[in-house]
Amino acid sequence: MTNATTNEKRSPLRIAITTGEPAGVGPELTAMALAGAAAHWPDAHFTVFGDEALLEARSRAVGVDWTALVGGSAATGMAATSGRPPSDVRVHVEHRPLATAAQAGRLDAANGRYVLGLLDGAIDGALAGTFDAIVTAPLQKSTINDAGVPFTGHTEYLAQRTGTARVVMMLAGTGARPLRVALATTHLPLKDVPAALKVDGLVETLAIIDHDLRRDFGLPVPRILVTGLNPHAGENGYLGREEIDVISPALTLAEQRGIDARGPYPADTLFQPRYLEQADCVLAMFHDQGLPVLKYATFGEGVNVTLGLPIIRTSVDHGTALDLAGTGQADAGSLIAAIDTAVAMARNRRGA
Image (cartoon, rainbow, N blue to C red; front, side, top):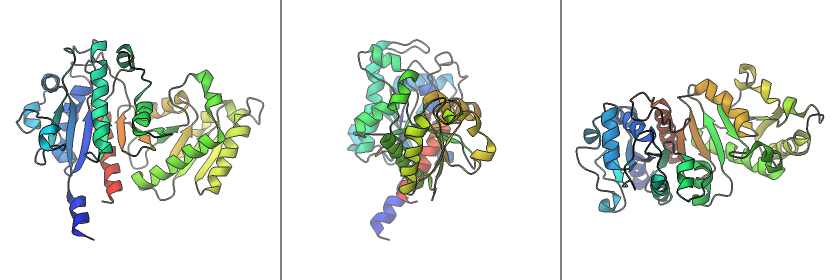
């Protein structure tokens, strides 16, 4: 092993965190999660993208000393450090000023582009190699759209900004054998789902899941269980032919590529311990087929992972929780889990 490789492995992991919708819980959850950064992630340093004054105010609301957390110095931005956060500060703020003052619980379209700017800064840094991973706090899609920017969601935007033709949304629980659920389609109206399912697309989705579970999660031979689209997986064609015409042919092609993907299984009976105990991931056909089960089992501790990107991105399993913002009642468990996952994935990519 060369000295350069050794030094790279010993250098801190660099994790970017975007604080999301300023009227929501993202800023305070960031403070709560990072309050234990030194103990939880001793090999990681963090750059927080957000408004410094907002972070300080929301930190006070939840009893976190933000000034002490960031090393007792005001944010100076990465420009002052040649494009990289300071090497001696565990939590650094990349100050991005709000367009207008933010009030907890009250959305303002004037800050829509501010939210998108936080995400752009983290993506640009990850693509440039400044960050090993990015973790995103929840944003409000409507605020960005109301600001005049068409926006479907984090997943689709990350794909666009990184030039990735196909990405896969996967939510995961925690524990020794976590439940993982990936989606063949994401934010589509239900009526558009059948037409969106194609043999080649499903094969590519399965290949992405297989590849990333091997590389980023350390699973040597991932086993993927695949749901049908229709009730009872189509009942041999009587309740729909997508299982026969699309899903089964895709599974045959995936098997020929060395991917252990099995199905299609009826979604209403698949999520049982006797099926899941030997599975590493379930691929569901649409958003509300798989995610209600995952969120029921793990809500508040789940993680959203975008597979297929050239960068690592994780996020929380919940929304902006406007009713909890600024009250100190929000739970940082999902954000902590998202950071845990991002750090673990980054370690795997480094080969640590």
